[in-house]
Length: 465
Image (tube, rainbow, N blue to C red):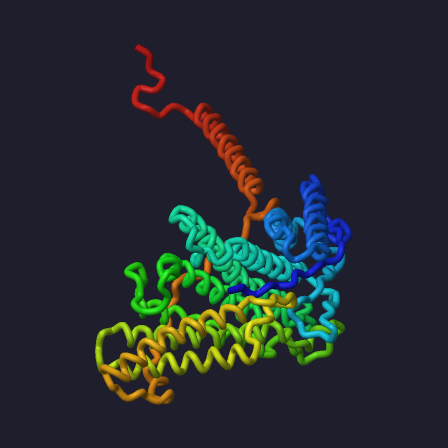
């Protein structure tokens, strides 16, 4: 099952030397300002290459490394501006293409954003997009390995580890989205720089939504890893009875229910206008835009899909419990799951996974799950009709029995890098330490001189024997 494919933005050229003035006596930051310009030019170049490259050949890892190089320089510029070591002779204007806004003909317009906070927010957004897309590429390279009868145990575990790596990438992306929403955009608000002209891509609500979506995508992959061994063992004889390697069923449906909660909350936040609809007019055409339909559809489809899977495993849990009174309940849960999956299949669920399209994607997974539900339903219905004879509850009665979901993974909090130069940097701390050491040496010397010049006051001073 594919995660969301983000369209990456592009950005315009800019020279920090055009608006940054080094105010230090020794002109200490002139070379660093030039290096920051070069680092940003590298970012712009990689984004342009990715834009022109086919989906399967995009080098997301290179983009991640370039951003790792650029962000410390941007933090250095911002730290020096705050301390007064660098003065802005004009308000910087950074141009970025928006990629999450709804547009006619799917065109992504370039907009101008004022302030250094704008470039930091846009760069972090691109960083999280790249991590998410890199996770998606990693998963795609694995194939449906857990259903391969010829795979060895060593190979399966190696692919489990790669799947876990993708989970980590998505947890990192979730942390960056959260940091952008709760820290960077808040600092931008406090600075009062161009808040009215932001596209939805740079609203707190949308970034909070993306954080939940990335975490739900990570949880989806974690569930797959959780089931990989039993999925392999179940290839030979699908359906009940479950293999001995099968993990806890209550954990499975609670994991799916948490995905439902995360995707639903994300969709609600993504559809919240918030700062995407400013009260004052703006020159940016995206300031009144909505989040693109592909993202909203993805969130709705994912929520519905995980709800169906939760109902499936609630049915399996009832059927495998060994309690005769739950025979009818097992049938009811599976009938509900079957109906939901059939509705999704007829509606063509999950064909969209971004502005790129896949022929199979989640739609194929729906067909696979529908087949699996059919096998379980046939088995438990046969038992209930011939042995347990329990009434089948109505859907309304089942609704009250749905438990609360739980998280299998957690977002990885984002820690911004140390500035490449200026206050907060390693170099700045070293210079301060050296300066303090020199001051300490000078004061020690002064004390020694004062001590030698002072009269002797010890007992017997001046007396010679």
